[in-house]
Each structure stands twice: as structure tokens, then as C-alpha cells.
Length: 90
Image (tube, rainbow, N blue to C red; front, side, top):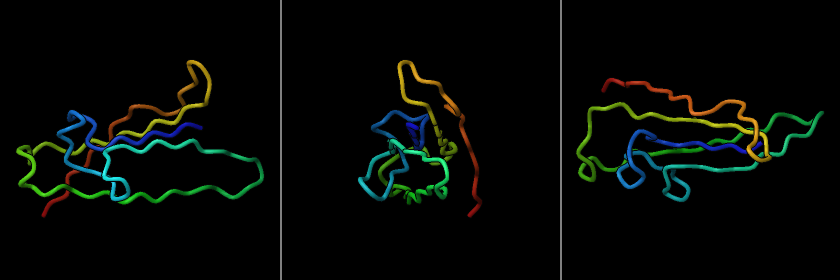
């Protein structure tokens, strides 16, 4: 499977407010190999919010998207471009 995670997807790539700790990028791409009879594979990714002095938009929610697709051209998308939004009070 081809997996793609996009953080703060509604913003342009240069103005994204959330980055992954490893690589300091707003996205993660990985090819996952699934083998029948093996245990499930898990990936834990840690993200962080950039310092609020680095961006102006502090009110709009941070949208995330996860896309899973079978390899091939064009590839069958199993789950794609669904936006998940949550607001955390503080």
C-alpha cells in the first residue's frame, strides 16, 4: 500500500502550522508491505505546532488527511483525502 499523511492540508505547503517531528515536514509518505499471516504493522508519528509567532492564522482548525492506495497506475484508492478536524480547548 502507498500511504500518505498530510498535516494542515488546507494551507499552502509553505504556510502549514503543523510539522512532523522527524524531518520537520508537513507530510509523510511510505510504502507499506502487507503479508498475510503476519501481525499488523503500526507507525507512530509525532507532530508539533510551530511557534505561533511564525504564522498569522491561529483560529482555523488544522485539517489532516490520510490516503491509502494500492500500487499501480492509476492505483486503487482505498481511503483518500478525507479531512479530519478537531478543536481542542485550552
